[in-house]
Image (tube, rainbow, N blue to C red; front, side):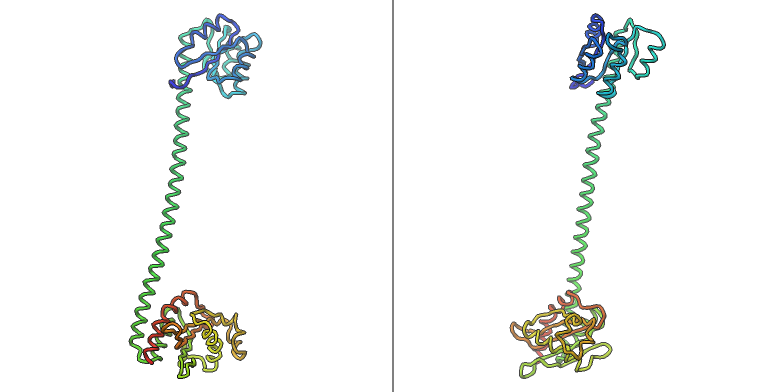
Length: 332
């Protein structure tokens, strides 16, 4: 038995001499003996103190020892019991056996055997408690490990997601830099404004498919005029292009910035003559400003029902607009 745990043994017997004899015989290291002279006293005492094992005579003055066992077990759980009887008849022994006692002992008592029986049972109880404590510790440890494993997995998944996102961002940046370098080469090779605008048009066709466009540049009076039309397989007619760029030109002059316009949703800003052609038309506006406050040109790209322009296209336009503007200014 554990040195820290003192087992409480309850001795129930209505014979004072035998009760005292049992108390003296069973008391010792790790065992505290409580005594009761009747069944009611035993039940009352067990209601106030912990009982690890009960030793009871089969016949008591106010009830039987089996009734004491039943009452204690109904209120305190499966308390182990040793039953003592002066009756050796089969009926008494059978009644006692049905309570699953640790031992049924007949008088005269073999005290050494009783002591050994009780110590063996108390040792078993202590081992059971030790195993239960170990099991609880293992369960806590397993739960802690499981939570830690889940946390590690969650952090790993988050890290992987972050790395994947960072890789995607880096890949986009590298691709963007590569696109910009190739575009710069095209601009360096351009010999006139038409070559510059064609280079921009090809850039967006390679990036996301079929595109139509109108290029505008400032004339001698600083007025934006159409200088080029682009499209696959052929550009749109000049009247349609004028209808597209006129309201956009006015909007850019008041607020020169790259922007997206859903022409179908904002068709009221366009001339009545072209509104029926604007359903599904997505417009990307690219003003050309080589230095602050100097607007020298405008490129209007549009798609007809294909995949619409997206914010990433605006970002690309903002990136290529300055070198495009510089190329146009250089040609002047």
